[in-house]
Amino acid sequence: MTNRVALVTGGTGGIGTEVCIALANSGHKVAASWLRGVDDGEGWQAKYAKFDFAIAEGDVSNFDAATKMVQEAEEKLGPIDVLVNCAGITKDGFMHKMTADQWNAVLRVNLDSVFNVTKQVITGMRERGFGRIINLSSVNGQKGQIGQANYSASKAGMHGFTMALAQESARKGITVNTISPGYINTSMVAAMGEKVVQSMVSQIPVGRLGNPDEIARVVTFLAAEESGFITGANIAINGGMHMG
Image 1 (spheres, rainbow, N blue to C red):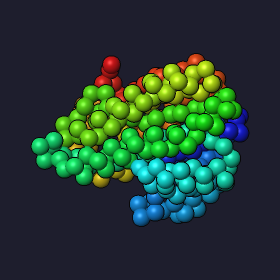
Image 2: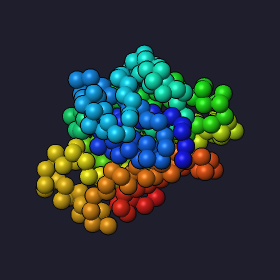
Image 3: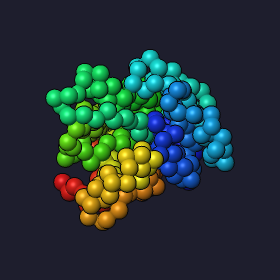
């Protein structure tokens, strides 16, 4: 068991919550970022009180807000050893109808946030000689998706970031990896309606949606001290939907 500190952006969401639980169960002290007006951080913390999660408020798409958010997390738990960049949004639309606001919002939350938060922890990780950075991308960052030029670009960009930082950080005891989930059984997916969900499932060879805890299991594997020889990798968890 470890006693290292983990920060999960978007930690109060469907996948984020399971990641926080899995990291806590493996011995990490866990902080989850949340955004007032979008999430109920205090309510989430109370719901999962048995795990003793810390919460840190901040808009990760904004550099200054991300700086304050990480400072809050570290004041509560100590220096961040494991960072899971899980925050993300969608604003879908065909390219010929997509607005600049739709494009910019998705790139800021999904991609800029990875820089904004990682920038706050990377120096400390280098100084301490240990770090685990895990970026939650998407199958659609690998294969693209109709109506998601913004989302697909942001998620593909995450892995480019991962590969570059992995090379920069390897000799400092820091690994940087990407996980690319397929369609996962979260409230966001369920809200799309039964017909849409059935259409999704029909594209998945294993014949079902993935579960958030299946993503969390791989996060904890990559976060482990024993996983120090895995870096710059992109691990697909999509039920066979895309094989690259």
